[in-house]
Image (tube, rainbow, N blue to C red; front, side, top):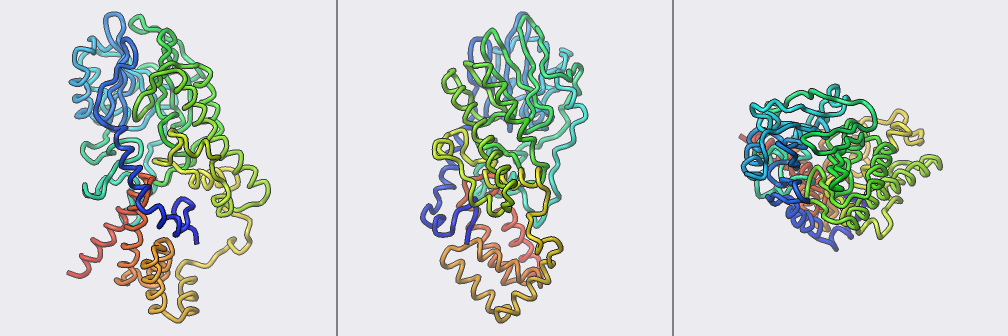
Length: 439
């Protein structure tokens, strides 16, 4: 019986809480600091959900991305202090996500800078995700402090200060090609179209200083190709092509959209190539499996990163995972059907549960088995058995209790932040629902 992220229950037990410990250590990436990337370029990290980059020019400054909201933006302005030369001549959005665009009004002030982006940002579909089920939330916004560690690519996503469009300013200048060369405040810039996590992502290249500001196409985590919160699978082939563009630049310095900077050319090349190679490996192996008639479940078990990539610090599964990427790539390229005719018109969950529960001897037998699974730390199996009973009776308090315990155990052992947050928010939601029903 396989469990989270392709790990068997015995493997989970052997590793115990090592995943949680790694995720906790990962929070160091988000400590508040202003980094001098190189002369005249500064990155504010940890003050908001995303990084803000300051580029000093002649008689003014350029801001790349603007944080999640005006409150965070004001804190970053204060942190930059006299490093920021007024007026702000330009603001550049790398992409549309609200954690990058929500504080523009603060940086603009009364200085009326031009606002640059790719043309696709203007028509970008809101990054909303699916409706919540049982309180599930990949960002853990409502988790109590004792349950929350981080959100994978940021310390918090809307927990303390919300992501709103309150501080957004629409772009005043856009481009729709692959590149755009600009000179702003005497600074030579190249805006490079690099779709990946966002369809409209651009990376900002400073050729004279060899600084790459990548946006969210490159982060210190396995990329979030198929988000748990219910978004379309990201365009994998375009993402690979985007990373090839960035590798070809040979940057000395890299500022990603989240987490810490890279301060030397060798590390930059190694990290960018690892990110590209990790995505390409998963994509190629999934496509090979599709051609051979393999199912998504089979491919999730078979496709593992080679050891060198699996151990690379820029491919740890804090935000995206190999398993979810396999499923997303499969669906993106081969549709929902896995080739097994039994699944063309499957039974409903309730119909299947009725027959399974009857087959094993009734509800008490399932509960007994589920409790036994909890005792031997087969938490996934316990949760699945609880679901059989909840399909028959959503108000089954004992089955709900089993599921809460199983989900909390699964969540507490997670290295992936979005999985942890989702497990724990659902567990807490179910527990709170039980309390309300008992009143």
